[in-house]
Length: 260
Ligand code: HPA
Image (spheres, protein in one colour):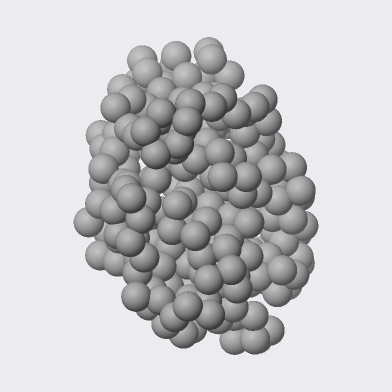
């Protein structure tokens, strides 16, 4: 259980995705677990060493990456963060690249979503615990939070002098997973206007909006989506890109936390 004085004390949370189990420059302060009506969710109170700033860190796939995208209890995760007082979330998402500019290893801060996932618990407003309600989701991500992430990417690139590619907006397609897509599915997503594809962006973003949390995504391209490269999509290649990309992701997150 968490200490009572933690409730309401932390505004910023980072939700880590695939490859983000350990962040450089951050240390664990305390492991917390909170019971919600949806399930128990685990959160780590973490500290950015260089700035003595604390924030909450939640691993979407669990500590040992045992929870596949379609089985994540998104409601428990978001309800837990809200209960602990979180008002801002940076979500890290690994994505497959559809847009030609999104080279594996580069990052994007999407501004739109198309949700192709299904059979997930998509709302707190289920008519049971909360009355039926319809949120405005015209712009699914918080623009101020997107701008903060973009500024942090700029600062991190300047520090590391890596100067990697950045896509400042784009449409995120959320597929069901856990399998990757067929080439025809990716052609359809491209025709729909999608620039990147992942499996965990939804319903997370909508649930955050339902609880009025400012939410935006820092997406790391880890492969060309199905059919867009002559090479097969190999998990070991994805992991190699993820491992390399985590330096940049850690620096970007450090900037966001330092500015929080
Ligand atoms: N498709 C869906 N999700 C992903 C991919 C992909 O190609 N790469 C990383 N997450």
